[in-house]
Image (cartoon, rainbow, N blue to C red; front, top):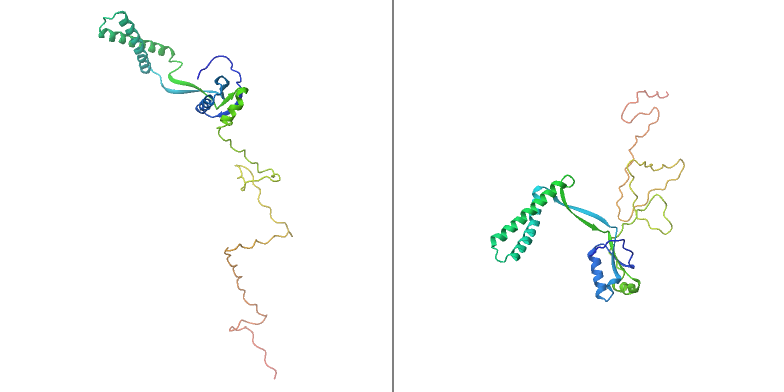
Length: 245
């Protein structure tokens, strides 16, 4: 992937949309393999953002180690130049020149770290990524590209918007069962009680196979006795009147 300066313009119409750059590359390879002109194709990244990944902490030891690695390359370069200039040089001289290059690399890395350590004390890798990638094609090759890719879109599905249960549903609109739970602090009005004289429908009859417990029997009430009549087996407390003579 090459990056050039300047503000790029839109390059054709969008044929397909992908969530990863690798998938967009495969689509471009498919178009080129099917004889679609390569200059007519472009990959456009949407929603660009910069991501800086921290790889480690930067210190004198880390700076010296990275400088030594760079110094090896520098020492090999100096040793190669020295050997080419003096074909009869011994191996010890070659190793010595390479060690000098390693020392120079470590010294330069430590000096640069001592200057920049107050502003930056960690190592990182910066990467520019996009939310999705569009494969665009010029109008002269748009029909062929649409036949090959079929306008494929691999973007993630968006969640459905929440249904507002406070408004009445429209005619023919389906509402999922279950009411929304009241939020914290929201007042819930109790169910209204029937007004005086209002007719209340009886309970619905039981369904088939449903067990219904019998209603409890009312408590038994003792029989009422007439005034002046006692309980059988107990004296009344009054004498019976004398029979007429």
